[in-house]
Amino acid sequence: MMQSKDRYERLTFYLILFVLLAYILWVMNCTISETKHKKQIFILAGQSNMAGRGGVVEKVWDGYVPPECRRNPAILRLNGNSIWEVAQEPLHYDIDLNKTCGIGPTMVFANDILEKDPEFGIIGLVPCAAGGTSIDKWSQGSSLYNEMIKRARIAVYGGGTIRAILWYQGERDTLTWEEAKSYKSKLEKLCQDLRSDLNSPLLPIFQVALASGQGRFIEGVREAQLGINLPNVITVDALGLPLEPDGLHLSTPAQVQLGYKLAHAFVKTHYTLKTTQ
Image (cartoon, rainbow, N blue to C red; front, top):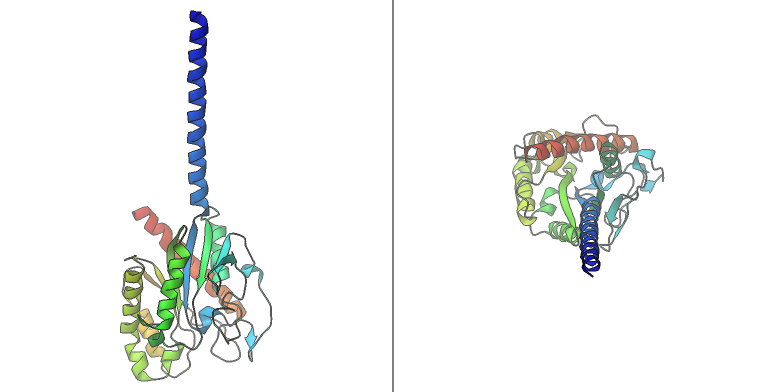
């Protein structure tokens, strides 16, 4: 009788232990899965060169998608209806409305990050750029600014972290000296407003210094961009990258090069920040 009782107690103990271990393993697996599938979000803003005009000549896109811009199930896009879908070029086709969109820099950017770090997780791209817009059109409280903040908040809902803002804008502000002269203070305020409204005081912002402009004051805007001295605002220079025949927009090969430049800058900054945290 006593042996049966002892055997029963041992079996009960081992059963409880087995259930407890199974539960611990399940929790660990869920945590790993959630971490792996948590979206690493990037906000894409600015004007036409961020929206992508690579391969667009006389308002017609040639349809060529370089292998560096390939689809990847680990790269998602928040579409114009605020629904996540697998990203593909042109990323801004339903965002930069009434414009012909082509190749931009961010599919290359995302693919290169995942090649460098396969454990980085799911990348969520949030297109917000609009061609032909001045920096005043992006000031806090404007329709473009409000829509960008709205889409950023939708993107993080349900799980996700905004890793950076990619900003490529300024061609429109090269038209007059007054616009070029005031560009630096407006860009600095925009960075500060974005960080405040997204509750991320040191959110990395990667801005692209102009390769071209619509007016003759390009050097004034470039000087402002290169002179920004805010923490975690990193400048990637596009000067010298090949342009489309219009002399304003980056060509497809140029957008590929810019994507690699942005990815290199992000990886360098991101992993430097991680080691100092």
